[in-house]
Structure formats: C-alpha cells, structure tokens
Length: 415
Image (tube, rainbow, N blue to C red; front, side, top):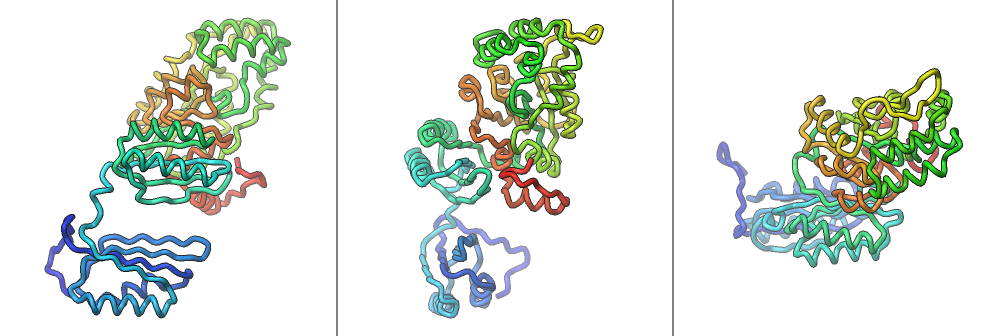
C-alpha cells in the first residue's frame, strides 16, 4: 500500500474502526504474525496494547476499518487458529480518544493489597463518572503498587472520594494529573526526623541527658500542632543544657535510616533528581547525613556549644514551619527547578507549609494535621514506595541497580 507524501493518518470520532483482541498462551512472534498477515491490506494502526500475565498474552489492536473485511477477517482468524489463541473482532467508530480527555494517574499502595480494596476503588472511580483506561503493576514488594490511568474525572472530586475509600480499605491512594511534569527533573525536599530517619534526634539527645520523657512530651504536642514550634524547640533544647557535646557524635552513629531511604535517593539521583533536607533538627547531625547520602542542599537549626558543652540554646534564627517552606523555594531557585516540580515529604504539623508549597506534597506516616493538608499520604513503612508515585517501577529500580553494579542487601527493601 502506497501513501501520498506527507500523509498523516487522522481518525475522527465518527470514522469506522475495528478492534482486534487476541488471547492465549504467550509465545514468540505473536505481534509479528498478526501485523504481517494484514500488512497487504488498506488499513492503518491506531492503537496497540499488549500484556503478559503468568504466561497468558493479551494483544489488543485498534485499526481503521478495512475495505476488504472478508480478506481481513480471514487473515486474522488464520493467525488465531495457527497460534491456538482466542480472537474477538469488534467493528465500531472512532479511536476512543474522547474518554481519554482529562486523564489522571491513580496509584494504589497496599501491604497487602486485597480484592476488596480494588473493588472499592474501582466502584469509587465509576461513581465519579470516570473510566479506567489502563492498569499497570508498578511493584510487588516491599508493597504492591498498582498504577491506574483514569479519564473523565474531576481531579478534586476523585481525590476526595478515593481518600475516604483508602481509609476504609487500609491502603494508600495518590491522585495526580497526567502531564509532562511527571517526567521532568525534580527537587525532592525531605524532613529528617521520623521521615528520613527513624525517631527524633532531640529525643535521642535527651536520652543521653537524662530528660527523655520531658522532651518527648513537648515533641509530641508540637508535632500535633498544639504548640508553636519555635517555642517548643527552645523549651526542649533548654532541657539539654550541660550535656557533653560528644553526645552529638554518639547520636549520629546510632541513627537508623527509614527502610528504603537509600534506595529512593539512589534511584532518583540516577534520573537527575536533586535532593534537599529541611529539618527542625540540628545542623551538627543534618550536615553529616547530607554528606553520607550525597544530598545537594540542607537547612537546619544549630545547637549552641560552649566549652564542649551544650548551652541549652539554639544559635541563630530558628527554622520553623514557615522557614521550611521558604527553604524549599530557595533550594528550588538554586537548582533552577520550578517550584511546581518539587516534591516535599514530611510527617508533622511543622511540615504543613512546606507540603503546601511543593508541587507534590506527600505525608509519610504522618500526623493527622499533615495528612489533611497533603496531596497524598503514604502509610507503609518503606520510603522507596514513593518512587512508584513518580512513575518508576520496581523492575526499573532493580535494573538500575544491576547496571550500576549495586548489590542489594538481603532485606525486603534494599536501603
């Protein structure tokens, strides 16, 4: 078949089309056999999708309606017979683009992910008048992550509806508009205490100073948004007065990173992402974490030290809730990355402004005040689950590690 020079296939919503669906055992050359059999016909390819699941192949193709329907049907039926596959042909109109307008990514994280959860999510999507166009598995471990392409929905309505369903089903659901920014270079800005690392540094310091219960009580109230952060920080730091500065080294050596933290950072940095730490904690610890993890930027408070002892005071202005948001914007400017392309991750009320300023705000095992303010919430204990929200599959993570010669540990989630 010869096309005129410069020919561009255009299919309108009223043009006749035919869909071809082949289902059967996965085997080599199915796609080649189908299209080779119809290559001589006056026909154009509009869309193709293929899936292999546990050795079963599903191949779907949308084509312009052939002039020679009899010849077309004989060709594809011959292929199906030779390959022992089931065949379904459906003649209709258009290329189905109408239902793909306003497409949205819905990412579901579950550990485990149960059929009841998927049933509830699918029902909610249908109730909002939307349609699921495509479903792809992003990961099987350390959590099951499923990505759904949804069309025809109001993003705000879908987010609210699915947020309620996520709470009922005990899963995490993220709703994000489909756009080119998902593939852009990004800046990831993270809180540190109880986000990047397990526990709170000031409580670890307090354990050495013999005032852990008192400090923990103030920390809890601050994280719930019941106390002004700056005031609560001064109160907690005052309890550390007189402690030997060597406790900072001891605390740093005892830090445990959240599971999956190194994996997330390693994977995203390979893709050109930049990273920043913005912490209400202390520079004496944060700077060393940033060096260890190859973090690009960081900001934190500084403990005053005199004569080898903690004075119980903070040196310089306090990095509070508003300061975290300002730091995010400042780091974005330094990295020449639009604020719309920033991702903020935190767990407490002190992160609300930062989460709100970012293009994508993620509450990680967070307090209620932050969950209510964030775009999405992740409650599984694996920080690398966040890469699935950014469109990266577990297979791609592992392939990147293998190409770089990285050998993961024996745990469920390397890092």
